Amino acid sequence: MLTGIHILMTYTCNLECDHCFLYSGPKAQGTMTLAQIRSVLDESKKIDGVEWIYFEGGEPFLFYPSLLKGIRLARSMGFKVGVVTNIYGAVSDEDADILLQPLADLGVADLRISNDSFHYGSENNPAGRGLAAARRLGIPTASICIEKPFVESVPGQDQATGSPVIGGGAMFRGRAVDTLAEGLPRRPARHFTTCPHEKLETPSRVHVDCYGHVHLCQGISMGNMWQHPLSHLVRSYVATSHPICGPLASGGPAGLAEHYGVELEQEYVDECHCCTLIRRTLVDRFPQYLAPRQVYGPNK
Image (cartoon, rainbow, N blue to C red):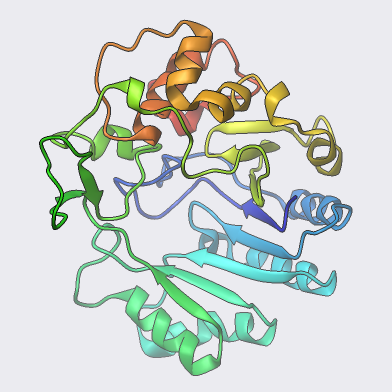
């Protein structure tokens, strides 16, 4: 089932982007210890099919020594390793090389660098320097580029009867629900009967955070690996038995709302927007599965 385990090293980030799935920022709490990283790696080794370990955040470069040690441990266990970063420390070409040379030496196989207007302007851009340095050092790399949402004009589409197409690449989870949805066209919740972005019945990757939550989607926990080993959670997971994933898999956000009697009084931008707002109403009812609370916003 799984091919990748994504380690959320920290919820803390030097930036506070409007589109962040996790409500990360300078004041966000929660960072993995090396002992916790070792535990995730040891458990990942017990799961057939897992080839990749990704280190993400928040911003993992904020805890650079632990990041390097985690990469070294993962590589020693035979995993391919990826890193997702905004590489804020690449303040010059020389600094970018210094930051990334250890990743090249350790054989990092995928480096994803956030490079968009949410993170940086067009001038004095650390992401651009980081991408160039990665290419110089032979690290496979790509940029993550998300822009402010906009309504796309689709040739031949009748916008009066067709579904509006929202461009920009932002997903309406986490902070984006509160910062980016205003002014965009919306549809009634009855349209949202599938989950188009996550394979909840057969996930190919999960994210694990310092609290032990094993995220199937940001804020939807398979279970807590500090209470039950990750390998056990993965082997025993059945979507239809999960109180959140079951209704979502069978009926999408509309099905989740109907299953738990959540009143839908407004229209929504898309499935993620609808799903997130429904889940916010259920956090107190399912704290074990809708966790951690902080990814649902400061008022939760």
